[in-house]
Image (tube, rainbow, N blue to C red):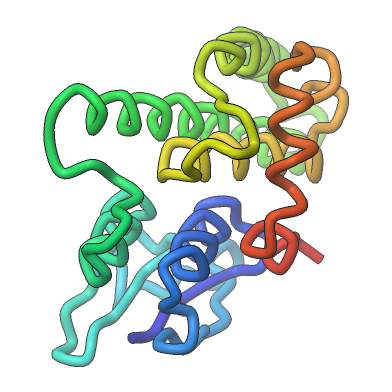
Length: 199
């Protein structure tokens, strides 16, 4: 398998954490790709021109991160990170959606700040910042203690908090309550997260 990746992409980080948690990292070749200046670097594997994209031995391409994570989880059926059915499955999927929404909002802020100042939209940034604050506050009822199973929902929440710490620390610190801070302090030391920290 080949994973088209950027070391600073939080969506890639989620996939890499899943691969490590499932013991699959040594089966995945990392292929550097920076789609922002050069979408063609990844468009053969993902016509959207985004990372992550995973190509399989038979040439099949998978994207985006929720699909890749579920595929990797299916390769090692023991101790699933995503329950196969029932309420627990939808709880994990909801947590992943919350975390991915935080990432979408955070990435939009980062990209907006890179635009020439005259072209920036303060309203769009304010809307995204408020969505992040609400979502990080909502994580208090979603995170679990450090000794609880580390499933795809918890992985996704940890990756979202890690990206905020990396790119928008003022939002991570300002919105996180004690339960979320305690969760992140423990999660960030897991080998799968520690080894995938962005440079």
